[in-house]
Amino acid sequence: MSVSVVSQIYWLDILSTRLGKHLRRGIPYDDDVCFTEVMFTGVSIQFWLEAAICVLHMPPFIESREFSSTFMSNIVVYRLETVGCAGAMLRVYLAWRPFAHWVLKDIPSKHNIASFAEIDFNSTFVIKWMLNSWHAVIYISSAWLCVLIVASYIFRLAEHMHSCALQHHQHPACLQPTARTWSLYGREFDKENDLYYVNSVWFIFTCITPGSGGNVAVATHFGRLVAAVGVICGVLITSLTTAALGNLMIFTTAEHTARGILKRESSRMAYTTAGVNTISLWWRNLKKHEITRNQRKMGLYGYRREFVAAERVLKVELEECASTSTKIEQIVVRTRHMQAVMDKIGINLFISMKHKDQPSFKPPTPPSRPPTQ
Image (tube, rainbow, N blue to C red; front, side, top):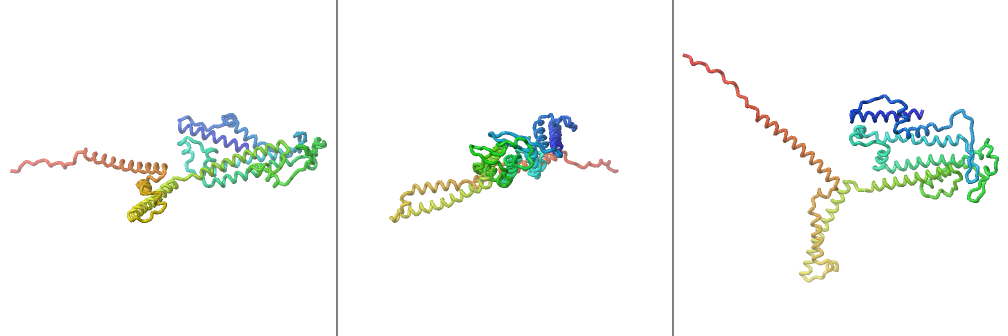
């Protein structure tokens, strides 16, 4: 069922690509897409990878089987159901497509916009869209929680589902001493399965957030693989968090404008203060009064310099305090307004010239009658 849904998704993608080429380039549109085109086109590798993940499961009514491997001279025995459950957990990625569709559901005419701007509203665009908003914290926290839950469950299957420690084991390797008593880093211990899910959650939590693995010694290759993937996911989530917070800390255009206005108003206060200090120092020098230490340090020249600098900032127009993007937006609005006015003037001139070129209407004169006698 899952493979059928995935194939329909790729089938719709091929139809969408053909429709775009038909509308932009005039290539004849063919709505007949066979299943072989989905399997052997440019996206066939991605399709086969998704199909393999969706097909991987433990078939029903199959007798339980066990297989063994060796890790550092220790025998590890897994049941086929354990591996099937771990593979089935990878299907969590299928929830990404409806989630991405939900994120972009408020964009009107997104296909027309994508064709006009020559971009694709793919997963990369969705991630950028999510991280460039104040909801980025919620999205990143949800991704972190999802990785924690899934990776903890797979680690529990990999590390604490040793078949020899379960009841009714049938594999002959479980009869060997190294299947029950393991040796790890020079220490021997009886292998027991830790069935508490919270312990696996703690281990993955310390892998995602650098915590040295929570003092847990990983005893299988499968467990090391899950731990390594958890560490990589933790690094990626941390990087995305840093990027999202860095983007949110940038001032918006309105905030840049407010900062410019605040600087202008601060200069107004400095302008008044410098003028008052200049007059006060001049009056004290004139009357031979005592001069303060700050006035002696600044002098008339220093106060005059502050006065001129504040005056220079005050002479800046209020519109100049806006940010560059705000100025560009104002220029665009004024240009459109001027264009509308010029179009209206041109239409009025054309109408007036058209009426001027037409001959004026004169009523016909009646024929003259011969004079009566």
